[in-house]
Length: 359
Image (cartoon, rainbow, N blue to C red; front, side):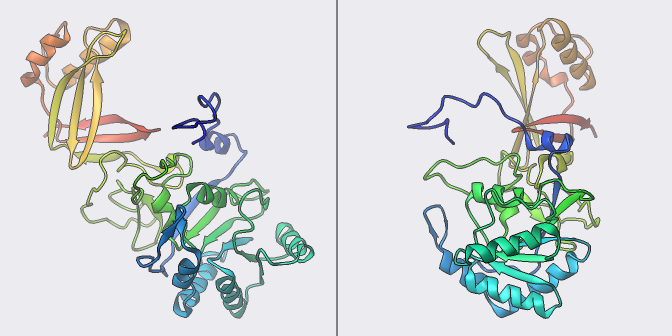
């Protein structure tokens, strides 16, 4: 981040236009994602300078059975897509992918860093015009490449670079006549690794990482938020989830707007005084849902709408006599019923509790 940490170049971000706003205004199209069935084993691939070692990553992807299976899936899922842009793991891998797609009767070409400029211009012009169905590339059609017709992206590679992932996905979001959305086929676990492209959190240099809170449907391979209990595309019922991260377990789709409200079982409820400089005190209510904590603030004693909203919430939880102060409320929390479940909805980096269930 250019405005954070030691040596920051700027003080702050003064203007931001969210990706979802650009989609809503018709300047970009929505991305929908599916994970590939044919996945490379990256367990032995080392990291260097913040990303996978290129040669090792290519070796993991460039195996005959993976190339063959992935290309069959690309052809199947791309049957109703006009223009496919494929990101390969290396030059040899790109050549093998191109040749396998051709064997499957797909008009496919490839460009790499060594492709002569005239040839690259000719092939990209064919792809941009719709004359070429599939263009395979190796790290040359990421930042700035403009192919509005592209309605399917294929990631046959993996990256730990958040900026590269966002740039690649952006290639499919350009608007074109008749284009409703862009399908992203992710064979490298990138959607799960990085999370929604409109809510990425670049990690500080040297900081730890971990998988972003998304999951893949084993039936249809759609990438969905980790909190989903069933797949919104095919209806597959997920087993009881194992929550590994406490703060962002409700996120994970390619766009935040694709995240749905999610019911969470409440294990315990904790009340505490919340102090904020220049504002009246309030009560912070923390719902412990497995390893995830969800908080809300009850502004009892605040004037106007905030105070009335707080009293409405307390009546909903069973309190009969209105408390006048935070101290009084904290002394009477035994009068409040604890919900067995709460329905939460992501709102940026926070969540909103939409509903409560009481047994």
